[in-house]
Amino acid sequence: MMPQDIRTSPVCNLVVGNEIRGKWNHSRYRIRRRLGYGATGAVYLADSDRGVVALKIGHDQMSITSEVNVLKRFSKVQGKILGPSLIDVDDWVTQTATYPFYAMEYLKGETLFDFMKTKSPEWAGILLVQLLTDLHTLHQAGWAFGDLKPDNLLVTGPPYRIRWIDVGGTTVMDRSIKEYTEFYDRGYWGKGTRKAEPSYDLFSAGMVMVNLAYPSRFTKNGDPDKQFQSKIAGSPMLKPYAPILQKAWNGKYRNAEEMRNELVLLLNANDKAKSPQTQRNSTQKPASRQAQKKKKSSFIVETFLVFTFVFVVYFFYMLGQTM
Amino acid sequence: MRNKGTLRQILLITDGCSNQGEDPIAMAALANEQGIAVNVIGVLNENAPEYHRQGLKEVEEIAMAGGGISQVVYTKQLAQTVKMVTQKAMAQTIKGVVNAELQQILGSQSSMEDLPPDKRGEVIEVVDEMGETMNLEILVLIDASGSMEDKMLTVQESLLDLSISLNSRIGDNEFALYVFPGKRTEAEELLSWSSKLESIGKTFSKISLGGITPTGPAIKEAIAAFGRKRSSKRRFLSDDAPGYSNESGM
Image (cartoon, rainbow over all chains, first blue to last red; front, top):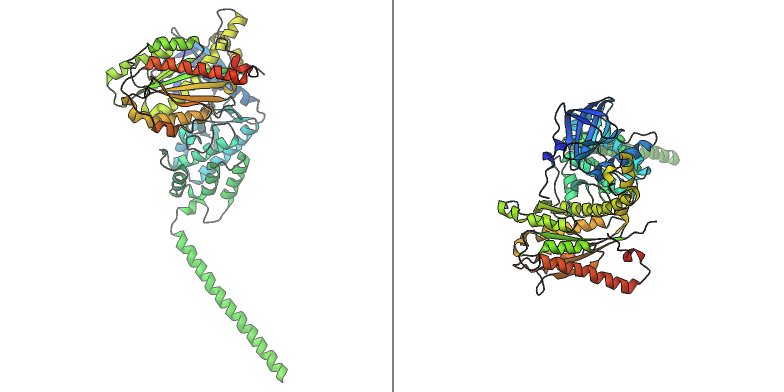
C-alpha cells in the first residue's frame, strides 16, 4: 500500500447528477455537491425520496458501520437531539467495488470560524456553554465524543445553536478513544491517557476555544504547560477564560456540568475586569485607577470631618462640665 | 465472558531494502503461519528520489505475506501511522477470526460484507469489543541502518505515543523492542517484554547505527522472541492462564 490519497478515490469524486442506489433498501440518491471529506470517506448533499439529505460514503466497512451504530444509539437518548438523525444505511455497488454509505439529516449551518468572523467575541463563550450542555447529556448516556474539533462542529440557526456533525470518534466510556486529532488530544500534550471519560472531552472543548483564538493552531514546542499558559496570556479573547481553560487543561473538572456552570457564572459576571469586551480596551485601566484615587481622597475628607465633629462635641461637653 | 486470547504482532519500521540473509517475505510468511501478524511501515524522506520509493515495494510484500498491514509514509506522519497500522492490523486479525466463525454458522461463502447493514452493525460491535479487551503482544523491530539516523527521534516519539493509545485500552499490552543489525548479532534486544514503553528513551540513545539491513534474519529473531516468551509463560503460569494457551489459528 503506497501513500494512499483519499482524494483520488471514487468515493470522493462523485459529481453533480451522479445517482447512487442502495443494494439492500433500493433507495436512490442524486448528488448535488460535496460537503467535505475526511480520513474515512466523503459527505455529499443529495436529493432523495425523503428530501434533501447528507450522504456519507466510505471505504471501510468497519468505520462506517461503527458510525452508524453510534447514530442509532444517539436516537435512543431520549428527549435530546445529539447528532444528526439517521435516515438510511446501505451499500453502493460499483463495477469494481462495494462502498458502504448512510444517509442522515442535513444540518444547515456555518463553520465555527465563519460564524465567529461576523460575531462579537462573547459568542465563543456562549457556544462553549451550549457544547458543554450537550456533552453532559452524552456523558450521562455513557459515551465520550472523542474527536471534538471545529471541523466536527457546526453552528445552525438562528436561533444559533452549536451542533456536532461527525460522530466517528464517539466511544463508550472507559474504552480507548476511537478517533482524535492531535491538537485537541490530551495524549499528544502529555496531559493524560486516551481513555474515554468526561475529562477527555472537556480538555478538547477547552482546546476548541483556544483554536478560535489561534485559527492556524500550533504544535508542541518545549514544556506544554508553559506553552499553554503563554498562549492564553497572549490572547485578549482567551484571557478572561483563563481559569476555566486552565482547569480543563489539567483535567480538574469531574463532569461537563461543573465546567458549564463555572463558565455561565463567568459570562454573567458584569465585572469590568473580567468581561471579554472591556478586556481589549486598554484605556479602561488607568481610568479605573483614577476613580480609585478619588475614592481614597474623599475617604480622608470624611475622616477629617468626623474627627472635627467629635472634637467640637467633646469641647462643648467639657465646657458644660467645668461650668 | 468470552475467552480473551492474545493478539501477536510484529511492527517493522524500515526505510529501505533488505540486503542480507534470509528472504524477509519468506520469514514474514513463517511468522504468519505461527499466528503472528507482520506489519510494515516504510519511512521516506520528504525529498526522497523516485527510485527510493520503488525500493520500498518490499514493504508491501512483507506485510502481505505476514498477514499484516503496510504503509509508506513521510517521517513527520510517522506517529499517526504507527497507531493506525497497529489498530487496523488488530481489527483485521479479529475480523478474520469473526469471519471464520460466521462461515461456520452461515456457510462457506459468507463474510461480514454479505450481511445486511443491520446485522453487520451487531458483528462490528463484537469486533470492537474484542479489540478493546484482548491482550496484545507487540514486538517493534527497528531498522538501524545508517540512513535511519535522522529519523530515530521521531520513531521514539511515535512509539511513546502508540503506548499512550494502547495503554488506554482495557486489555493488557506487552511491548518488546529490537533493532537490526545488532552490535554482534543480526538483531539485538533493546527492551524485553514489558507493559511500559516509557523507558525506551534511554535505550534509544544506545543504538549504534550499522551499514547492513538484514531484515529477514531480524524477523526470524522476532519469531524466536515470541517463542521464548510463550515457553517462559508456560513455566510460570502453567495452567491458570487459559487465554495464553488458546493458540487456535489466530
